[in-house]
Image (cartoon, rainbow, N blue to C red; front, side, top):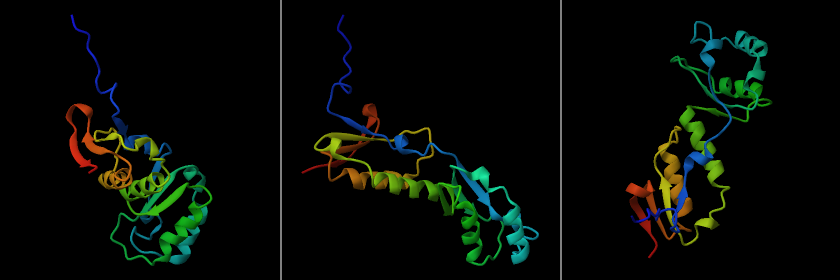
Length: 167
């Protein structure tokens, strides 16, 4: 009986998995409509008072997205003021969606990665993930990998789609 050989494990193939760079700290989505009169009118004095009374320590060591779930017309300073209260506690605050926060974090992280281990090697950009890796993060990763990799495929070793091959 022939021995089964894992040719992928024995190859020079390198796997780049964006899930490895997914933030480990919690992500909190903070709806500021809770501090608006009737959920959609900002009364400055009441708004400021409610912010002063809020327990901001619950956002310690978390990433926070700020948004308003109501169709309220808000002054530009409203989100800025909330971020002032978050600043001593939150790791990062973004006015927007969880996806926008994740994309910002991936941009920062991918800018700091050492890509030299991928120099002149075939790379698979792992495509399946259990975490909500934004589609745009794959585009960012490709831009970082192309100057280094010999070739880049997307997916898994058993069913990879070729994306790039150095000439």
